[in-house]
Amino acid sequence: MPNTRIYLDNAATTKISDSVLDAMLPWLKDGYGNPSSIYTLGREAAVALNKARSQVAKALGCDDNEVYFTSCGSESDNWALISTAKMMGAKGKKHIISTVFEHHAILHTLQALEKEGYEVTYLPVYENGIVRVEDVEKAIRDDTALVTIMYANNEIGTIQPIPEIGEICSRKGVIFHTDAVQAVGNVHINVKEQKIDMLSLSGHKIHAQKGVGVLYVNKKYRLAPFINGGAQERGRRAGTENIPAIVGLGVAMTEAVAGIDAKNEKLRKFQDRIINSVMKIDRVHLNGDREKRLAGNLNFSFEGVEGESLLLQLDLQGIAASSGSACTSGSLDPSHVLLAIGLPHEVAHGSLRISMSEYTTEEEIDRLLEVLPVIIERLRGMSPLWEHIIKGETFKIK
Amino acid sequence: MIYSEKVMEHFANPRNIGELEDANGVGEVGNAKCGDIMKMYLKINNGIIEDVKFKTFGCGAAIATSSIATEMIKGKPLDEALKLTNKAVIEALDGLPPAKIHCSVLAEQAVKSAVADYYKRQGIDPTPFVGKIEEHCDTCCEV
Image (cartoon, rainbow over all chains, first blue to last red; front, side):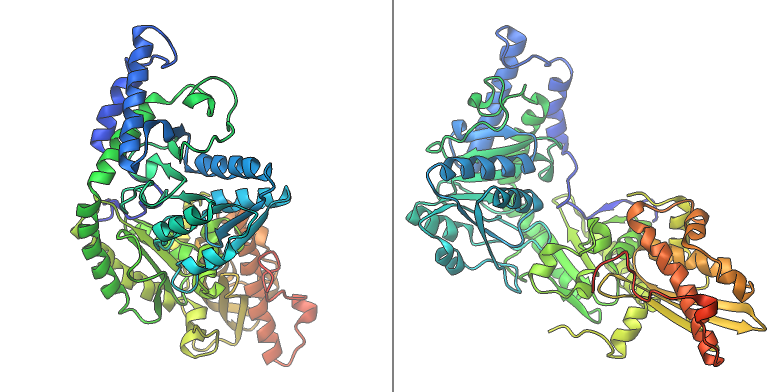
């Protein structure tokens, strides 16, 4: 069935759900008013904006006035880090704690802050891809301004001990930000209970459209504006609001949060099935903790195979997935996440990320498990590296 | 990054893939750390490349460049095969994305490395014919 499209790259982006699209359409057609305008067309848009804000606030367990709409998860991350650093730097606190395997929206922002004189501690994530709470506690100093640790990793899906870290940060009086782009809709989040001060999320990972995100900021902090201009987003993030996208995000958040348990129950079964089947292949590794990972995420490394050719072979079979090989990362090195959990370059190049959604079906998993071993065998059959591996001539892992 | 149809065609149906039992010239270039290794097997008779096979660990471009390189040298006299440039490989594939140019260099080096091995087996110093061979892709990562 070469024309079948099996989409197993939901950590990259997701399809827009029918209900989100239905909610958006009126705002793309007749509801084009600017929510800042006084007349009916504008007021209706403002009402829709407020409704979406309430939906997001309810889903996160915060107040409406703690929700800021942004253009994407990366913008939310940039805003949270840069503005917090500025705010706390002015009080002489210029130390930030993070991990080695954050998303580049965090890592590259931290590197930029380092150039401006901030000091960053990058905590290790060990072989299982999970940061240790005691490491966070030990790293906190008198001049620590911020702890920023992702809720769930985008490549290996490992879930971090966020409530425990929130507890420590709260006790020590340190601001705590989490990039929850991959976690929203997969993990139960309540920012107040889990003592999260700031949280970034993105619409297109939960079946809303691309180009819309959220930054939640605890109202006890007054972050400096990230985009200067009009009075939108309580004067902190100027620019006319993307009403159709925001309306869609409101619906998507409500649905994502309501569907967590059902989705996880379904995807855990698929995940177990895939792991049990794929681990029968010779010299394959499951990357990231077996249990503490997103139900929809799988990340394997196949020795002797290069990730990009694996993706292209899957694509020829109509299956879309992702890899952390250098060839697919657009740089010379394989994924920093896979290197962070201790994989040698040679093994990291052969990685495959499968990320499922609530739309994934049993038949799609059947098809994946049917073609994957054949592709691995084919690529290994033409791989001089595999030849070296089976003769025991090359690197050893663990 | 978009591959040409020609690249995808060679990737999906690589020519001359496998090993050559009676090869009298074998060359391997690249390294696992960088993510690509090419191994080329030549059967040379009376100065003509009678048969050629290859094995490649690497990305789509690495497989496509090695596949088309084998096509371009099969049946050719050695001196002609040694004139194969990475540029000719790129042209034959209707272009490569900039990040993948090193794969074409690797394909050129794989041919040269296999020919050099042939000369060595004949007790002939290959350097005057083949020149210096970069066995590691110098445009790739540091090892």
